[in-house]
Every structure is written in structure tokens, then in C-alpha cells.
Image (cartoon, rainbow, N blue to C red; front, side, top):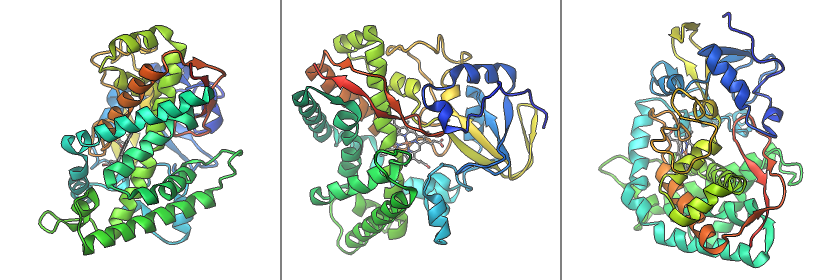
Amino acid sequence: MSCPALPEGFDFTDPDIYQHRLPLPEFARMRQTARVWWIPQPHGIAGFGDDGYWAVTRHADVKEVSTKPEIFSSHLNTAIIRFNEHIQRDQIDVQKLIMLNMDPPEHTRVRQIVQRGFTPRAIRSLEDALRERATRIVAGAKEDGSGDFVTDVACELPLQAIAELIGIPQQDRSKIFDWSNKMVAYDDPELAITEEIGAESAMELISYSMNLAADRKACPAKDIVSQLVAAEDHGNLGSDEFGFFVLLLAVAGNETTRNAISHGMHAFLTHPDQWELFKRERPATAADEIVRWATPVMSFQRTATQDTELGGQRIKAGQRVGIFYSSANHDPEVFDRPEVFDITRDPNPHLGFGGGGPHFCLGKSLAELEIRLIFNAIADALPDIRLAGDPRRLRSPWLNGIKELRVTYG
Ligand code: HEM
């Protein structure tokens, strides 16, 4: 297990090191020095093993781990979802019910079913409603004159998009939004949301969604829920599976997209030439560069199913492997001048949506649509938007988040 020493004082499982910046210089040194690193974790951290894990920071290696589920399994807690601990205490085996934590063939079965809700046609059918919503959100912010971009603009569209996609009735949306936001509002002392509150909200959302599924099973309608739970011929999701799928969407599709939008705005405001270019030309390549630049999900993890070798290093069965998208997205082997925010970058084979394996982000097209629509609406209605302070970042070793971004709208 001998590895070169990590840059001094660098423990990138410590949420505090992400509070002001992504540790890009440290990642660069790691990429240059070794392909895999052993990161000791004497105290452990939610989601990772107690003694430590292997860290993979190069683009090619992140892809390799992502595309070999038979060796690098997702079965043991892939995502660092904070409320897992509480649910486990209640003896419910959440891991197996969330598709992110499944391996083939079970994962393949669920993925084939839920993919029906994410076809290009299904996503296109949301465009008009989401455009109208984006325009309204931005108009509301403009009236305020100035404020926090995250709460005024970035928050709402991702949740509306999920609600539209699933067909959550209008009258239920505010409680769905409330539960979803509580689930992801951890570590914000101002909101005083504890992990227990997050766990309770998750349970409420699951139980609401299970009831919705049971209703549609009994009485199918023309919506995605009915398609996912009621189709007899192509298999279907059980009500409990549907409940956990909605939970996953509320986590995977909510804060990720919100952070992409907030980081995108911050990047534009700190790179005025790119904002001018966007306003003029609206390049279709912008959304991908925003996701590469932001890398809202910084890492995931896998667990080795057998003794194996990666980058000349022996990895034992049962050991964990962290894959660092935030590092891969700045790998100069793949990206020309990775430190430059360039909305015309093409090709842009970033790994912000995953390393191309079976778990590759199901919501990629939806997220890109949302990013395109919101920045088009901002460019139309708030062309002179300005930064009014430094962003306040989320304290997380997993999500690259902005909690607050003060701006003046015009
Ligand atoms: C999986 C990122 C938006 C639904 C993932 C993964 C990443 C990711 C890194 C794991 C990939 C892997 O392990 O190989 C992002 C980012 C987003 C975003 C950066 C926004 C910019 C969305 C949206 C939805 C969504 C809008 C749906 C509404 C999912 C689901 C999975 C997933 C269901 C699990 C897929 C599976 O296990 O097969 N996403 N995501 N994501 N994402 Fe996204």
C-alpha cells in the first residue's frame, strides 16, 4: 500500500477544505504523481470506510472504475447521502432500494423501466412549461432589484422540473419542495436543519410517493407515474421502488442542478467576456462547460468486489474507491487549458454527469435543458446582473455547492 505522500495538510474528505475553493492545485499534484492514492481515514466519514479508501483522480481512471461495475460495485453506499445513517438505524435497507446503489442485473431492470420517463420526447415535452417557469422566476427576481441568486433564481426550476416530469399535482408541490429542500439543507446553521429533520422529510417524501404510485396503479392516468408503476407488459416498479426513485430524483436532480446554475452564474459574473459572448451567441456548448466548471457532484465511490489492480496498485476485495470527477474534469491529458472557463469548448468530454458506466446520470438532458432555459431567461431579462459579494459555499466533501450568491439584478 505504499503511495507517495499527499500534499501536506491535505485531507480532502474534510469538508472545510472545500469551503473557499476546489482543491485544484492539490488534485493536479496528485494526478501528476500517482494513479491511485490511499487516503487514511482514522475517524471515518459518512459514506466512506472507517480506515480509508483509494482515491482516483485521473480522467481515464475515473472512466475505467465507472464502467466496470462487476469489479467496482455500487452496492455498498455509493452516494454519500447524509440521512442514510438514520434510516439504517430504523433497520430499513435503503441502499438496495435506491438505484444508484444497485449493480446489474437488478440495476439494469430498474434503469430500463425508469428510462421511459426520460426519453428525448418526454424531456422535450417539458420545454414550454419550463421556459415559461424560467421567465417567471427571473421576472420575480428583477422586481426585487437585488438579492440572493440561489434562493431567488437557482432553487426553483430544478424542483419544478422534477414535479413536471413526474406529474406531481400543483397543490402538492409546495410540500414536496419543502421536504426536498430540508433533505439537502444540512450543515446550514442558519436554517437549523438537523440530519433528523432531513431524515424525517425523506420519509415523508417516500410515503407521499408510494401513495401516489398506489393511486395510479389502482387508477392509471396519462402520466409518467402510471407508466412506471402500471405497465404490466414491460415490468413495472413496485410502489416502494417508486417511492425511493422519487427520493433519488429529489436529491440527484435538485441540488445538483441548483448548484450548476449558481456556479454558472458566478462563473459568468467573474468572466464578463464569457457573459457577453453568451448574451450575443447563446452557444449550445455553454451548459456542458458550466457543468465541467462547476462539477456539482465532486465524487462518488465504489467498492471492489474482488482483489484487483488499478494503476499498478493492488486493491483488495471490500476496499473502497473514491472517483473524483472534480479532478478528472481538470485533467490536462483530456482538456486543453482546463483552468479556462470557455463556453465554446468543443469537444468537452467532462465527467460531471458520471464516468459513462451504467449509472451515468439519468437526468443529463433535463439538467442541460434547465441550464439553457434559465440562462437564456437571465440573458434576456437581466443582462446587467452584477456580483454583490463573495459566494457562501456549502460545507460538503461531496457536493460543490453555493449556499448564497448576493447579486444586483440590473
Ligand atoms: C446519477 C450528476 C442532474 C437524476 C448521477 C451521477 C452523477 C450525476 C455524477 C452518478 C453517475 C455515475 O455514478 O456514473 C448530475 C449533475 C446534475 C444532475 C451534475 C446537474 C447538473 C440530474 C437531474 C436528474 C438526475 C436533473 C433527474 C431529475 C439522476 C439519477 C441518477 C443520477 C436518477 C442515478 C442513475 C443510476 O443509478 O442509474 N447524476 N446529475 N440528475 N442522476 Fe444526475
